[in-house]
Amino acid sequence: MKVISKKGFFLIETLVVIGILGIVVTLLFRSFYNLYSAFSASEYYNTVSASNAAYNVYKYCNDQSVNYTTLIGTNNYLDITTQFSNTYFDKIKTETGISKIYLIKGTSINSIIQNFDVLFRKYLLTLENETGLLIVISTIDGEYGIMRVGS
Image (cartoon, rainbow, N blue to C red; front, side, top):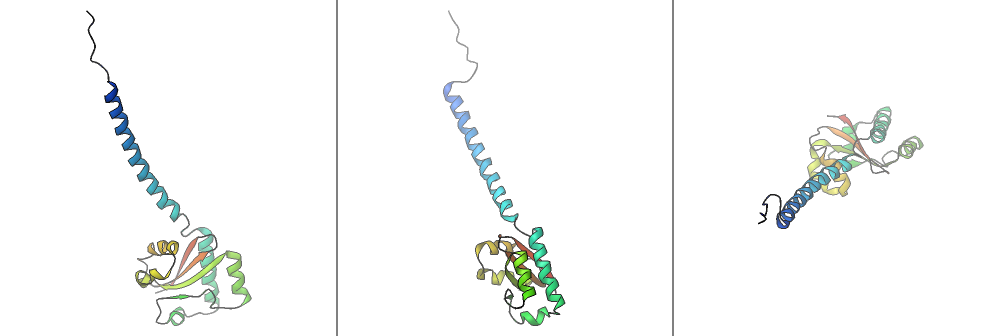
Protein backbone atom coordinates (compact mmCIF):
# COMPACT_ATOMS: atom_id res chain seq x y z
CA MET A 1 0.00 0.00 0.00
CA LYS A 2 1.18 3.46 -0.91
CA VAL A 3 1.63 5.95 1.95
CA ILE A 4 0.62 9.55 1.17
CA SER A 5 3.21 12.02 2.32
CA LYS A 6 1.89 14.98 4.29
CA LYS A 7 4.93 17.13 3.50
CA GLY A 8 4.48 20.29 1.44
CA PHE A 9 1.59 22.71 0.92
CA PHE A 10 -1.85 22.03 -0.34
CA LEU A 11 -3.44 24.36 -2.84
CA ILE A 12 -5.45 26.31 -0.23
CA GLU A 13 -2.38 26.89 1.94
CA THR A 14 -0.45 28.20 -1.07
CA LEU A 15 -3.29 30.59 -1.94
CA VAL A 16 -3.39 31.90 1.65
CA VAL A 17 0.36 32.57 1.60
CA ILE A 18 0.09 34.35 -1.77
CA GLY A 19 -2.81 36.44 -0.41
CA ILE A 20 -0.82 37.47 2.68
CA LEU A 21 2.20 38.36 0.56
CA GLY A 22 -0.06 40.42 -1.71
CA ILE A 23 -1.37 42.40 1.26
CA VAL A 24 2.15 43.02 2.61
CA VAL A 25 3.41 44.15 -0.80
CA THR A 26 0.40 46.47 -1.18
CA LEU A 27 1.06 48.08 2.20
CA LEU A 28 4.75 48.53 1.40
CA PHE A 29 3.93 50.03 -1.99
CA ARG A 30 1.53 52.54 -0.42
CA SER A 31 4.04 53.64 2.22
CA PHE A 32 6.83 54.04 -0.35
CA TYR A 33 4.47 55.88 -2.69
CA ASN A 34 3.56 58.35 0.09
CA LEU A 35 7.24 58.86 0.84
CA TYR A 36 8.01 59.40 -2.85
CA SER A 37 5.12 61.86 -3.19
CA ALA A 38 6.40 63.91 -0.26
CA PHE A 39 9.90 63.88 -1.74
CA SER A 40 8.81 64.82 -5.24
CA ALA A 41 6.76 67.74 -3.92
CA SER A 42 9.69 69.07 -1.90
CA GLU A 43 12.21 68.81 -4.73
CA TYR A 44 10.99 72.21 -5.94
CA TYR A 45 11.69 73.89 -2.58
CA ASN A 46 14.77 76.07 -2.30
CA THR A 47 16.32 74.98 -5.56
CA VAL A 48 19.49 76.67 -6.72
CA SER A 49 17.68 78.73 -9.34
CA ALA A 50 14.91 79.79 -6.93
CA SER A 51 17.43 80.65 -4.22
CA ASN A 52 19.44 82.62 -6.77
CA ALA A 53 16.30 84.50 -7.80
CA ALA A 54 15.49 85.32 -4.16
CA TYR A 55 19.06 86.48 -3.62
CA ASN A 56 18.89 88.77 -6.67
CA VAL A 57 15.69 90.37 -5.37
CA TYR A 58 17.32 90.76 -1.94
CA LYS A 59 20.42 92.34 -3.48
CA TYR A 60 18.29 94.71 -5.56
CA CYS A 61 16.31 95.79 -2.49
CA ASN A 62 19.51 96.38 -0.54
CA ASP A 63 20.98 98.41 -3.39
CA GLN A 64 17.82 100.54 -3.34
CA SER A 65 18.13 100.93 0.48
CA VAL A 66 14.70 99.41 1.05
CA ASN A 67 13.56 99.47 4.66
CA TYR A 68 11.70 96.17 4.90
CA THR A 69 9.97 97.01 8.18
CA THR A 70 8.58 100.24 6.75
CA LEU A 71 7.63 98.53 3.51
CA ILE A 72 5.56 95.80 5.14
CA GLY A 73 4.14 98.12 7.80
CA THR A 74 1.43 96.48 9.89
CA ASN A 75 0.68 93.84 7.25
CA ASN A 76 1.68 90.22 7.76
CA TYR A 77 2.64 89.86 4.11
CA LEU A 78 3.02 92.06 1.06
CA ASP A 79 3.13 91.18 -2.62
CA ILE A 80 6.15 93.13 -3.87
CA THR A 81 6.12 91.69 -7.39
CA THR A 82 5.09 95.07 -8.82
CA GLN A 83 6.32 97.25 -5.95
CA PHE A 84 9.34 98.50 -7.88
CA SER A 85 8.64 99.51 -11.46
CA ASN A 86 11.83 99.97 -13.38
CA THR A 87 13.58 98.11 -16.17
CA TYR A 88 16.32 96.66 -13.96
CA PHE A 89 13.87 95.08 -11.53
CA ASP A 90 11.73 93.81 -14.40
CA LYS A 91 14.85 92.32 -15.98
CA ILE A 92 15.67 90.47 -12.74
CA LYS A 93 12.16 89.02 -12.68
CA THR A 94 12.28 88.01 -16.34
CA GLU A 95 15.76 86.49 -16.36
CA THR A 96 15.27 84.51 -13.15
CA GLY A 97 11.73 83.42 -14.06
CA ILE A 98 10.02 84.95 -11.05
CA SER A 99 6.23 84.89 -11.06
CA LYS A 100 5.56 86.24 -7.54
CA ILE A 101 7.59 87.91 -4.81
CA TYR A 102 6.28 88.24 -1.27
CA LEU A 103 7.65 89.93 1.81
CA ILE A 104 6.36 87.84 4.72
CA LYS A 105 6.61 88.11 8.48
CA GLY A 106 7.85 84.66 9.48
CA THR A 107 5.87 84.59 12.71
CA SER A 108 2.57 85.11 10.88
CA ILE A 109 2.74 82.28 8.34
CA ASN A 110 -0.01 80.21 10.00
CA SER A 111 -2.40 83.15 10.00
CA ILE A 112 -1.89 84.11 6.33
CA ILE A 113 -1.59 80.68 4.74
CA GLN A 114 -5.19 80.61 3.52
CA ASN A 115 -4.46 83.55 1.17
CA PHE A 116 -2.29 81.46 -1.17
CA ASP A 117 -2.74 78.57 -3.59
CA VAL A 118 -2.29 74.97 -2.45
CA LEU A 119 1.28 74.47 -3.69
CA PHE A 120 2.46 77.72 -2.17
CA ARG A 121 0.75 76.77 1.10
CA LYS A 122 2.70 73.52 1.23
CA TYR A 123 5.91 75.46 0.83
CA LEU A 124 4.92 78.00 3.48
CA LEU A 125 4.24 75.17 5.92
CA THR A 126 7.93 74.26 5.71
CA LEU A 127 8.71 77.83 6.88
CA GLU A 128 6.35 77.99 9.84
CA ASN A 129 9.21 78.02 12.39
CA GLU A 130 10.92 80.97 10.70
CA THR A 131 11.09 84.31 12.44
CA GLY A 132 11.83 87.74 11.07
CA LEU A 133 11.10 89.05 7.61
CA LEU A 134 11.40 86.78 4.59
CA ILE A 135 11.49 87.37 0.87
CA VAL A 136 9.68 84.39 -0.61
CA ILE A 137 9.60 83.90 -4.36
CA SER A 138 7.70 81.63 -6.68
CA THR A 139 9.07 80.95 -10.15
CA ILE A 140 7.26 80.25 -13.40
CA ASP A 141 8.58 76.66 -13.19
CA GLY A 142 6.85 76.10 -9.85
CA GLU A 143 9.99 76.39 -7.75
CA TYR A 144 10.14 78.27 -4.45
CA GLY A 145 12.92 80.13 -2.72
CA ILE A 146 13.49 82.17 0.41
CA MET A 147 15.84 84.87 1.59
CA ARG A 148 15.87 86.04 5.20
CA VAL A 149 16.08 89.83 5.30
CA GLY A 150 15.75 90.89 8.90
CA SER A 151 14.37 90.24 12.31
